[in-house]
Amino acid sequence: MKVVVVGGGSWGTAFARLLADHGHAVTLACRDAAQAAAIRETGRNPRYLSEVELTGVGAASIAAAPIAEANLVVVAVPSAAFHEVVRALPGRAPILSLTKGLDPATGNRLSTLVAKRPVAVLSGPNIADEVARGLPAAAVIACESLPLAVQLQLAITSTAFRIYVNDDLVGVELCAAAKNVIALAAGGADGLGLGDNAKAALVTRGLAEMGRLAEVAGARPETFAGLAGMGDLIVTCWSKSGRNRRCGELVAQGATPEEAAREIGMVVEGLTTAPILRSLAHRLEVEMPITDGVCAVLDGIPLTDLVARLMERDPTVE
Picture 1 (cartoon, rainbow, N blue to C red):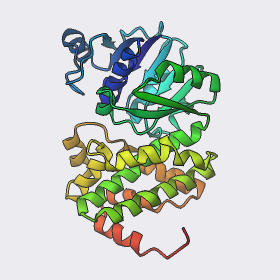
Picture 2 (cartoon, rainbow, N blue to C red):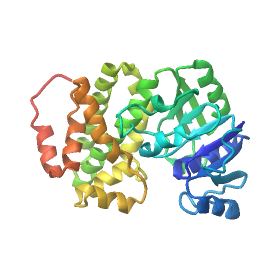
Picture 3 (tube, helix red, strand yellow):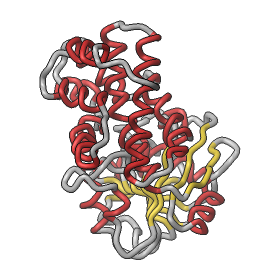
């Protein structure tokens, strides 16, 4: 296949390497022409995953990339840029979204912003540097068209990267968005030194509120027990490489969200997604106390106050 991966960040870089290793003709399309030129000249991305060898991967600016001739366009850009990017893409090739979040302008799922072409979403426990190094991983591709999902599954799956298919597009996208918000809270627990018991309880109750939202939104609750839900939640909340977890940890240690994001040096999707997810939950009348609490901390209340609020909630059934 001729594939263009739009987005020269860590996940786009890792996925381009993955696809090239699978025998596809891959171009990594970067927002910055200078970054693309550096990749062509050195065979490495100077800004993200610079240790990963990109020989065999083409590179170009988004404007110059052969998107119109591609058989598949992979989009790996921040959620805040997703709509602007996809509406400007030429051609009619299917889009595979790697972006995890919701549209900041409308609160909608990102796949709903793709018009006049097929769209699928890939999600799961996929730390970019591990995928780039060829360590074993698995993911799920969600699409309303099962034939397209299976076509992408066969084109991507390998002995190092196993793909499953799922037709619950709503559930997979909501999982991808909500898990980053829970990871901010999990990082906060790490930063306060609350221990493994507290963190495990937090993550488990986070998964429960993700499932409640899924059911009301029309998704299947079992999706949240799969790779896009529990799998991605676990790795995001525990991995030292998880930027959302790290951001929550830094905030717990006294940094503002803005200071934490600057120190991390990459987009922290949970910061964008949290207020959007809260608005969606309120609109659907779904109780999401951890998400509400994360938003309250981002608005300035002390994290220790949030912990007290969560522990003092009325006892209930599980």
